[in-house]
Amino acid sequence: MATSSAPTLTVVNSESYTPPKMDFKGAWQALKALMADKEDTSQVFKIMGCLTGKSLWKKYLQFSNTEVGNRVLAENIDLLDTLADRHALSQLPEGSLGRVYLDFMKRENISAEGLAEASDGRYEQLTHAGLKRYAVRSRDMHDLWHVVSGFGRDGLGEICVVAFSYPQSGSHGFGAIALMGLVNLTREYPKRGIWKAVWQAYRMGKKAAWLPGQDWEHLLTLPYEEVRKQLKLSDPTYYAALTDIIAETRPEAIAAKNEALQAA
Picture 1 (tube, rainbow, N blue to C red):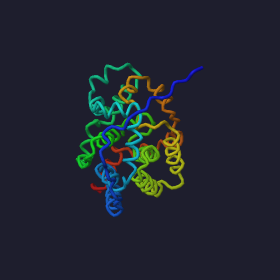
Picture 2: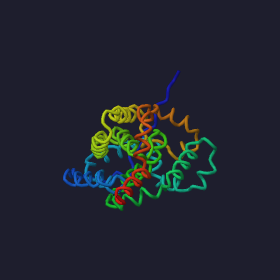
Picture 3: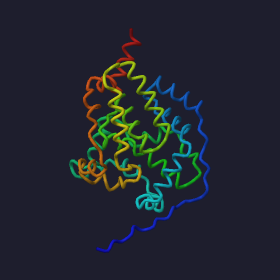
Picture 4: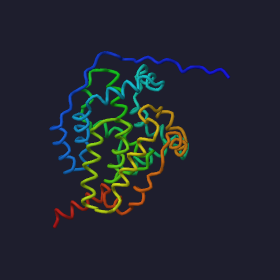
């Protein structure tokens, strides 16, 4: 049987770019600020900016040499336009990734635009058009990754989704955040299997399909379980078993605990 070779894709927006040097001091300061206030998402973007190095550029080149990436870059497609259109998402079939994502966002009382606001214009500093579009698209995927991976927005879930993101992105920023979060949470809940949960999350990210290169606009229309299978995602069993830690590290639980401490 004759086989046809894959089409040769062209890197678009290939103007020159010099990756930034890593700023370890700035990253450490932002890490300490994040550990002091785990809901301060802006610190995450500061850490990522300080520890990006060459990883973002390398992944951009990988993205731009995929069929999806070529189309996104050539047609200036913004994932945020799709994720922010709640009416369109609500019209998707019951059980589709889009509907599951929409339910997640409503339940958590968050918005797709929230990540853009939290990034505090950090991506505006990128002068390379293609790289900027890839970086922004990757940012806007974060809550989708929560949904497809099965990790919630509790403290443990956030650490797990960051550990999952590390091999997907190659960014040392994710590695630093995951490690710092892991150490802190283990101090609070010693000998509870948190290391296993986070390691499993990392392994999930390593074994999964490359999520930044996926056609999320299309995947949103497909059944949720079909998408997880297509992305080669296993179940986060160790994480799911730690129900008490999940409950106690939910944003509302932490807020209630802080209020009680202030009132005491």
